[in-house]
Amino acid sequence: MPKGKYKTWEEVWVTSRHRRTQTPMGNSNMDWVTGLVPGGKENFNSCLIIVDRFSKSMRCLPCHKEDTAMDTALLFWINIISTCGVPKIIISDRDPKSTSEFWKSLYEMLGTKLEFSTANHSKTDGLAERMIQTMEDILRRFCAYGMEYKDHEGYTHDWVTLLPAVQLA
Image (cartoon, rainbow, N blue to C red; front, side):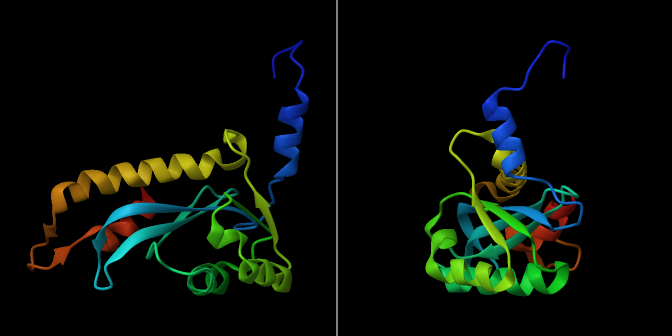
């Protein structure tokens, strides 16, 4: 911070409220990308994005926009908790899927604290939003006009099969 510049109350509150943990997946952002072209064998049209604030890594989990909170919690359980452990803090927007009673019960049972981002504060969920923007850009370029890629063996790939590569990008 430059000499003579003092942090405003808002800067102190926003950065201290969402403390970073010193462990992978200890503090994560969660958000959804919707409006995708149906892809994969199950015609996924949405993607749950989990961003680890410690390692800056991203997980892309294909899902359906119509999924219930129970479906989303199961997806989270299978793909995040079973492989990375239980996050201490999850920051999410106020999506009905993340504010439902089921999620609240799951967080309470696991000892995870759910914190909501506030509108127009990029310090709380800016990392996730930026990663989502990058992911959408990559997928949009690939999926423009329903474009499909055929590899040397003739297999067709759509955006769902690209997600592992997008996670590494």
